Image (cartoon, rainbow, N blue to C red; front, side, top):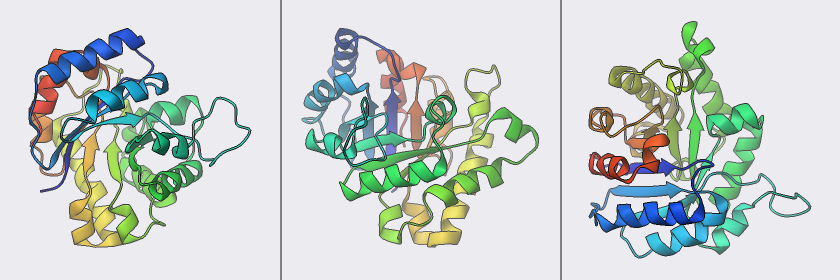
Length: 253
């Protein structure tokens, strides 16, 4: 079975003490993950060592960075390199989140380089893609996501692409009052898998986890994750509430 992942994205939330308490509350539940199930916590940079220390002793639990630089090193004040993440044993990094694209003007070419940096150092990229409301309203979501994948990922080899996790974010359904149904989520996940199949073949396409990043909550996780091409979620607000994220982890296939 494909890897199934419940990934928490804390974004720029919580103090160190609050983050530590949240992790402790989730770990206290002692959820035993199957071999194909993973719980990943993308925490702010200052909390990575704390999170890595707490999570490393648990089977299939891991800390993740929320971003990394497209540069290997140098005079880039405020940036964090993939090599720095590797030096503290971080195994996952979220790349191309919709907020990074919108607020910090990240583009497909830069994200291609960031993905390369991570793969070179054995860090699993969680690569985000997805369309805005204006794109969805003109029914151009499939071609838009196809362009994101082609420009950032489709130069990788079969072996390299197999080491990437994809997260589909319907930006139009995040904080807009609009809701994406499980059917809409499955439709786009199936589209992404078809695109992967067209480029890399069925076997590779079937092996790549595709997470859903559109307002996953404790109440809808089981239905979403039950879709055949949805392999878990990249979770925002609900990951900041221990009881909610516990239920989301438990909803994994």
